[in-house]
Image 1 (cartoon, rainbow, N blue to C red):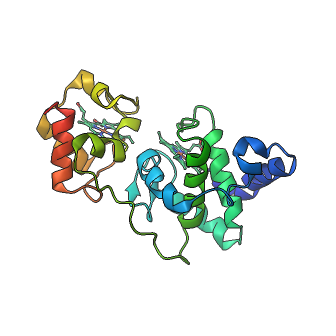
Image 2 (cartoon, rainbow, N blue to C red):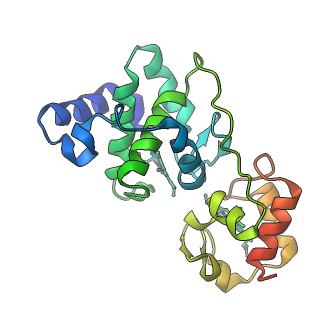
Image 3 (cartoon, rainbow, N blue to C red):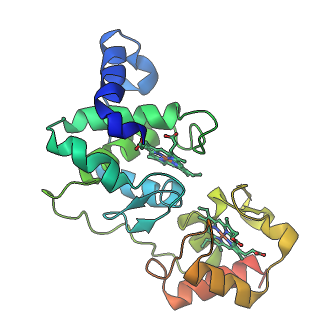
Amino acid sequence: MRLAALACACSLAVGLAAAGCGGQLGGGGVVGANGDAASGKQLFVEHCGSCHTMADAGTSGTIGPNMDDAFAGSREQGFEESTFADVVRWQIAYPGIGLGMPADIVTGQDADDVAAYVARYAGNPDIEPSGGGEITATEGSEVFAQAGCGSCHTLAAAGSSGTVGPDLDEVKPSHDLVVDRVTNGQGGMPPFKDQLSDEQIQAVADFVTGG
Ligand code: HEC
Ligand code: HEC
C-alpha cells in the first residue's frame, strides 16, 4: 500500500526527474510524453493483470494491490496523470525488494506504455472505459501467453518460468483440472471465467496437457 502514501512516492519520482536522474525512467523521467496508453493496455493484461485487479483492463489478480483502489484517492486530491505515470514507471523498475513484484517485467517503451495506461485509467471515474484489449486468441499457446499464465507457472512448451504457482511440467495436471482451475481459480490463482470463453479455456487446457 505504498501508493496510499502517494504524496511521498511522488516527491520521490518528481524529485528524481528534477535532479536529472530521470534518464533511467526513459525520456527525461516524464513518461507522459512517451507512453502510449492504448498499447499499454494489452501489455497490462499480459504482464500485470495476473497480480493486479483493474476494472478497465478486466483483470482480477489479487497478489498485488488493486490498481483502481490504489489510484482513486490520490486522483481525487488532484495529482496530475503524468505524476502517476512516473510513479508506475518507477514501481516497474524498482519494486520493493522481497515484496512480491519482480523488477523490469516490462522495459523501455513497453514500460512507458503500461505506465501511461495505468496512469490514465486506474481508478478514474471521469474517463470512458478504453474498450478493446480483451484476450482474443483462440490458439491455446497464445491464450496461455495473453492470460499471463506464464508469469506464475513454468511450462517448457510456453518457454515460461513463473514460480508463483506449481511447475506445470512437474505436476502434469489432467485436462479437467486445468479447465477447473482456469475457470474458477483457487488460492493464489485468479479465476479467468470472466476473461476467457469456454472455447479459450478448452484450448489452453489442450495446450497445457500437450493436446
Ligand atoms: C507476480 C505478481 C506481480 C506482477 C506480475 C506485477 N505486480 Fe505490481 N505489485 C505486486 C505486489 C505484491 C505489490 C505490492 C508490493 C510492492 O509495492 O512492491 C505490487 C505493487 C504495485 C504498485 C504499487 C501499488 C501501491 O499501492 O503501492 C504498482 C503501481 C504496480 N504494482 C504496478 C504493476 C504493473 C504496471 C505491473 C506490470 C508491468 C505489475 N505491477 C506487475 C505484484 C505484482
Ligand atoms: C497470479 C498467478 C497465477 C496465474 C496468473 C495463473 N495461475 Fe495457475 N495457479 C497458481 C497457483 C498459486 C496455483 C495453486 C493453487 C492452489 O492449489 O491453491 C495454481 C494452480 C494451477 C493449476 C493446478 C495445478 C495442480 O496440480 O494443482 C493449473 C492446471 C493451473 N494453475 C493452470 C493455469 C493456467 C492455464 C493459467 C492461465 C490461464 C494460470 N494457471 C494462471 C497461480 C497462477
